[in-house]
Amino acid sequence: MGEEKFTAIVVGAGPAGSTAAMVLAKEGNDVLLIEKGASPGSKNMFGGRMYCHALNRILPNFWEEAPVERAVARETVTFLHGGKAVSLTCRNSDWTKPPYHSVTLLRAEFDSWLASKAEEAGAELACNIRVDDLLTEDGRVVGIRAGEDEILADAVIAADGVNSLLAQKAGLAKMFSPGQVSTGMKQVIELPEETIRDRFGLEGNAGAVQLFVGECTGGMPGGGFLYTNKSSVSLGLVVSASALQRSSVRAPDLMEDFKNNPEILPLIEGGKVAEYSAHLIPEAGLGMMPRIYGDGILVAGDAAGFVLNLGYVIRGMDFAIASGEAAARAVICAKERGDFSGNSLSGYQELLKKSFVLQDLEAYRKVPEFMENERLYAEYPGLLTSIFTNVFSVDGSQPIRLHSKILNRVKESGLSLAQLAVDGWKGATRL
Image (cartoon, rainbow, N blue to C red; front, side, top):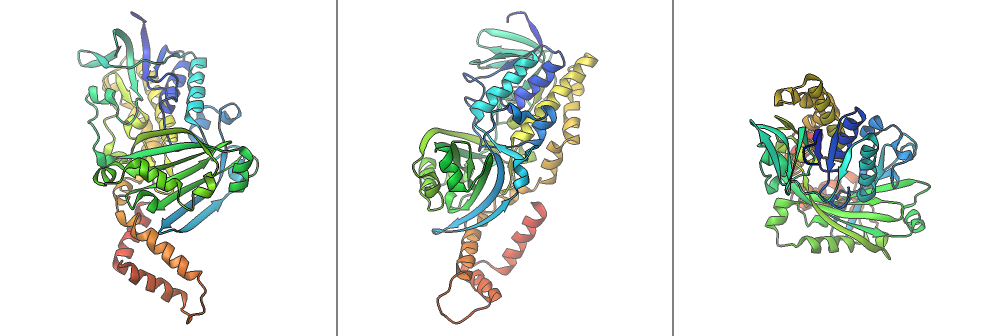
């Protein structure tokens, strides 16, 4: 690759990087897509679901050829406390019809497919390559150094994950703090397809998603998740890294306890663990977004902190895909001007402001702070399960009306009505 110069070098063949490479290559640009792993997706971990709107706009009807698992038709949020559980379920059969609302995925397969679309468009894919440094000239990024190789480009797109060393080397980002990220742990548990359909009450290509709040994280900020695939389930936990750091609980023990929870065990019984992975997840939204453009460089996907966790909705891949496309468009415009300075590439941020990426992150700017409220993971799941257990209990005792049952449980919880009102108002206005 010696003296060859590319229009763009994209570092990281995840959803953001592969999308950027594909869009650039489709416009006839020379693009090098670099992946540190043995293949795209081999080092990537996420919960297991993608909202389809962003990719469908770029690759209409992508599901006709992409290795998707199931179309999500049922959403459940379950609150856990003291062996009790309360669930809220929403089912929509329209979500199983194209254009799909969201689908479950296995990243090793999906990322390889998306990278292959970039190759089909004309991008060059290089795996097993670790980028060690950026090449600069007069303060502008002009390429990358990988081992002894120096590769030149008009622009570099850093899509190298939450701990983006390239963004840090370019002076665009600082090392994140534990309070800005969560630790994600996931197991892919194989089960026969028929067993999955029967246990989750699914038909055809329909899938189910279940999120868990409460004792699954030991009362620490975070939650559990379960996504159904064709012949496996993706089961995992996301826990605040700072809370886990302060706790004496070991992450693997937390995961094993979760698997043995009465709400989980029957769903995975007889399953075989085929994959175990862990990953840091950006959680601070705009609070951790670096400067996303500089002279000769752009930052996209997780590297830019583009993840949104509302508790009941967790999004990352649609942000990654949209930011990858926007980064590519910014490079294309810069090439037309013959100017790859930061001022020229600033159009990237303007494109993101016009899209859902920065609009959604701005709308939910205060959510990360609200989600740090530990009452959401300890007291409130306990209160909810206590209220509903009491509501559905029949034991022949003196009748108590519903409002009295609720107030009695609130008093027993030690939570004040004022505290409930404040937390409720914050949740309603920030979520």
